[in-house]
Length: 50
Figure 1 (cartoon, rainbow, N blue to C red):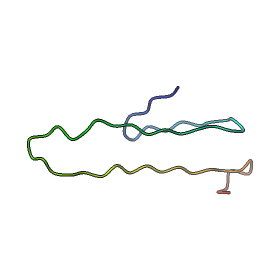
Figure 2 (tube, rainbow, N blue to C red; figure 1 turned 60 degrees about the vertical axis):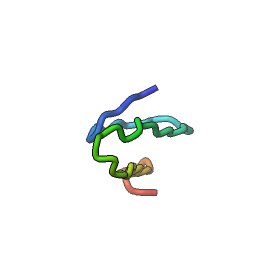
Figure 3 (cartoon, helix red, strand yellow; figure 1 turned 30 degrees about the horizontal axis):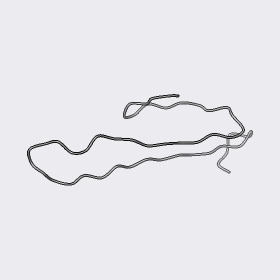
Figure 4 (cartoon, helix red, strand yellow; figure 1 turned 90 degrees about the vertical axis):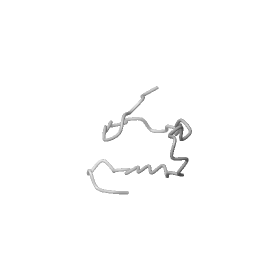
């Protein structure tokens, strides 16, 4: 398992993998909603987007 913090990157050199996202609920006193954004880019052997 790899745990990433905001802004971190990791190269995954596997033929198949699963990605899971998890987060804590908003515990601030403001009670305002917030969004979770995630991005994934898959590159081929030529280092270009598939």
